[in-house]
Image (cartoon, rainbow, N blue to C red):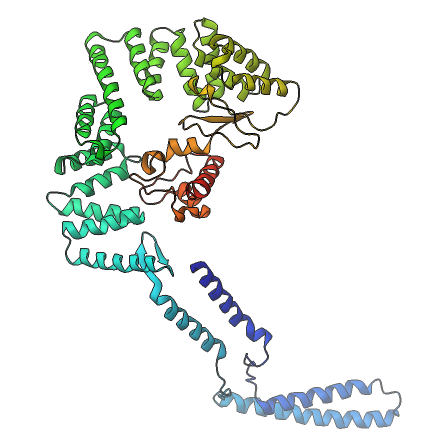
Length: 534
């Protein structure tokens, strides 16, 4: 609606500017400031001079007659020139005459004023206060109510900056997705109130988790100190402590989280984290006490890998390759898989080839090496590698891989198979059914479910959502720290969804720098078409 009004106003202004050029009478003629007597004398002089010049070409007149007329015209012209000189002197000696233009109604200005005043009257009732860097307009009653509420909260916080008023205003900004308002309001609460509100510290910590993880950890710790027993604070605090390597503190936080009961949610993840910490804490203690060994690094790598923390696992495997055994098959396989997943296909293939050459190859190494060859369009090598994979795991456990071999054989023969194949991400995922003929990918619910076209690795929309959005919006998109998307009519606006994913909104970061345009398009379609319709 705002854009429509801007277009209407712009068109009106353009019409007012162009109307005087089209409609006669809407523009004033330029005033003639010359002296009328002088103008008459100049015209008479010019006429006499033309008559004198024309006499030279009058063959119909006798010579005596032409001479007589020339003398008469010259005498009269001389008299006119004398009058011009006298008039010029008289005009120069007098002040300039002020000629008053006839009064006329300035219709263009009047029309512009009416249009502007009418717009103000119409829009005045539905302009909302500034939030962030924009003033919002809306015809929706709910938005109008929100705008009025924001004005009330701002005035209350300005008059009495108490914990109640500041938190109410901060909560409004949080729900509205105004990061600037959230930071300013909660920051004021932390700086001016004692003790600082736990909710303000928690939400500022959540905002800083991506940009300043160390600051986020401090704020979450502060929130837990002043307001213990909050499930959301404990969940993110435990996770940040794990990231920063404070494993004992993380284990304590997860245990405290579990004491809150099922109402806290996230119990399964907490138990998985505790199981991981119970396994790695003794290993790190042994590492500190006895020093580094390939066996200990392999045990740590395996623990992190099975927990889904591939990057932390690869740190240990990389140390095995660089400091102990450059031919360790498991380390070569895991680092190669990680490089391939990160898009460094050629480097990943090199390490996976070394792992296969060394023997004792696990199935995942063969699976990923075949995917690497397929991505590089080395069809023959992909066929040989996947054939070895089928022989290693058996036809019953090979899942979609035989179909992928047929796809590669078709491409090797110069053909073009129908649709794009869905490549399994792991051996466990290899048994998921192949996609339908219309090219739509089957949803597996796996975070790392991938599809590939030759030379390109792409994530399915569901997997993109799981990997990037589910931690805040919930695994079923029914809400968490972020709003619910499933069944939400507001997210049916695809343009709004795409802009939010690209540039971020409120506490949500933008993904333009981390996701390719194809992935953002797929996510936008998935949220606006599938989730919104649930």
